[in-house]
Length: 323
Image (cartoon, rainbow, N blue to C red; front, side):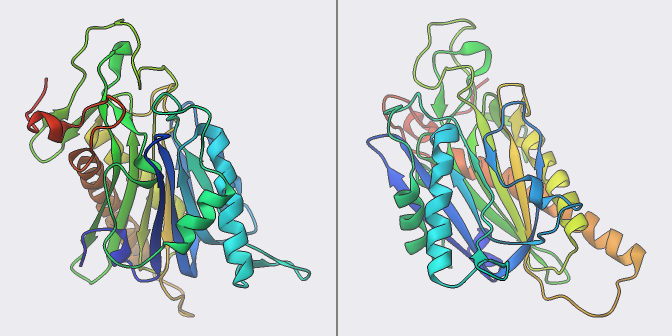
C-alpha cells in the first residue's frame, strides 16, 4: 500500500507541472472505466461534464477525471485527455465513434505566477503520458502547483497549498482512496489533534498579495474504491466525502470556493442483486472512510507543499502550529 489513491486497482495518476507559471494539471485514468458520481458544494465551481454523473443521466462510467489549475481556462486540458483516450480506443460507444468521458474541475490559481499561462490540451495529454500506478508525487505538483490556503478575511499572507493523496483499507478488504487539490480560503486543521497547521496570519483587509484574490479558492478532489457500486451509491459517497473537507478546512464550501468531489467505483459488477440493508451499510461505511481519507489527504497536501513565487509553505516555517 502506498497510502494514496493508486492503491485502488485500476487507477493511474499523472501530473503536468509548470513551476514558472505556477500552475498544472493532474489526471486520473480508470482501467476499467469506473462508475462515476459527483457532489458540488462550493459557490463558485469551474467544472466540466458533471451533470452526466448524476443518477438520472444515461452515461454511468467514466474513463478519466481531470483536476486542473487555470480556473475555467484550464478545463481545456480535458481535450488533451480525450485525445489520448480516443487514440487508444477508449470511450462511450455511440455507434459512429467512441467518446471518452472526462469530467473535470478547476481551481483558481491565476494569482500565483502568470495569469496568462494555463493548462491546455497539450498539458492534459502530457499528464496522461506520465500516468502510472505507483506512488504519487504530492505537494506543489500538477493541479496543486499554484494552490494556496489560509486566505480568510482577505489576508495578505496566504500559505502554500498543494496536492495530497491517501488511502484506507477496511476490515473486509475494501480499499478507499482519495486525491485532493487544496486551494482553500479557510485554515487547514489536523482532524486528529484539532491543531491549525496552516492558518491566516495577516490582519483582515490587508493589501492583497498573491493568493488573496477573493475568487482564488476551491478544493477539488476524487475519492475511489474497489467496491462494485451503483451510480446512485457512488453519488452518495461523493456527498459523504465532503465531510472530509469540513473536518480539515475551516470554513469550507464558502461562496468563494468551488469545492467539488468526484467519486469512482471500479469493482466488478455481480449478477446477484444486493440485499438492500447490506448495500446501504456498505455505502455508509465506504462514505465514512472516504471522508476520513480525504481529510488526511488535505493535511498531506499542505505538509508536502513547497514555497513558490513568494508564498511560503508550512515546511519553510518549521511546520509550527498557527492560530
